[in-house]
Length: 600
Image (cartoon, rainbow, N blue to C red; front, side, top):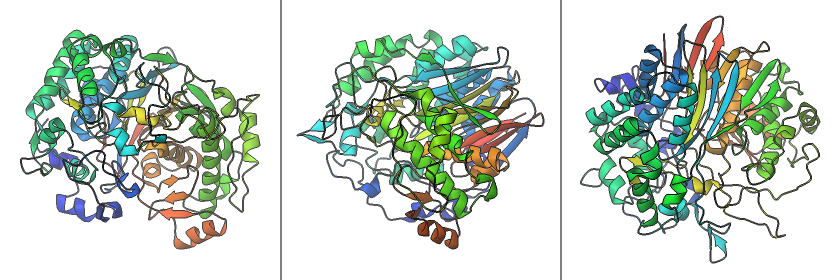
């Protein structure tokens, strides 16, 4: 698995060409502190671009008949395909892929983080939703991110043990395997163990992120792993081995997740969090031992003739993706082409209305009331769609879903675009759409036993109340799961058969990336790989972001005449999808990242 890796990562693009085609964001001069910078140093808004764009390749697609895996890295896709070829289920393959992603794409996800998984069981014609979101330690309070009466700066809060939530992904994967797996648990660890021992070659993307990410090497363990003796990021092609990770995986393969939550691994996590020298956290062994993954009801809504199912709270993905699409079907979207000012305007207005509700109502439903079903109810979305003016941009205000009367202050959390998504269909007809994250690129910067710990507590609102003393729904509370935008989605045909599995990384823009892809594929008839490649739109409440080649100058001027503030920028999605059509599996991997689609 470790031979000719760079050629397999970039089969049609030389390293020189990779950097030559690197996006505008790669070329921007960004003042990034070098390793050793104190975490208390101020960081500019320009620096808060975790997991920035690192280039774009050609459209990446594949077609298969039996099974398909689409993940964010060729190593992970290969591991998933290997499990599928052995007769494993989609859940089995997702576990193998996740373990590899934590090694080769450590900035985005790993066993020190959390995830949401949708798992479709063909034999039962049933969709399950597994919640592996991190939880806040029991010793926190709603002023956790307040210092001297003010909210902390983002990177002041991120780096170190203070930002680490109790990791949930391993308990979630174990639960899903017990219910939907087929191959032995131990077997699923072998690809990642072998790769950690034999080593993998540093990719151009990983090196670029090590160069450009703020404050990566501020702790000795992460510095020693990713940087050379001179403090430089390891070179492209460097064979990086991780024996500590291999040993961790061996323990988990043999003993299940108990050592992770109650044994030696749990103790190492708690020690790293509590004894961080500059920004310690409050996590305890009891917090680790008490963590439970949950089986929840997926949230389904309608778009045209399709049933669109996503993750319910604590994810805001299902409600917001569903709301965007549900409103759009009440607009004249069919009249306008992809790339037109008119369709972009309609999408933007629907997105901003959906985000107004999302920012007001969405949080962990185990702690606050969330009008989940009412937010995607057809009659409610039809009424919201009437607020969309076809000729001009309108201010987006939250509605009142159903009879919900608990009006709350809107509050944002600084969700960063560092996550990973995978879509898998097995030969039995099962499907998995899973989004997984450690939050900011390289998480909290704490490396423990070969894996990085998350900084997911910064997905909570830093501000617990507003000036009128109204409590924010997504405030920090003991044991609570922070609101997420992760949007693993599975779409069904009218007859209940699988039609599309899709999702993306991207912070709060995940929602727009996912909804736009569904709109272009199912609403406008674009092949799935082309729909992924088409220009992204970001409209989360304050401006319209479009990729440089998305719109013509005349389309931009038309949008501006409608009242939109348009910003051209790289939008670093990682959309990975499988469309089922005509008895075939059509996979698409986002050309903005290094993923691949493999199948048979």
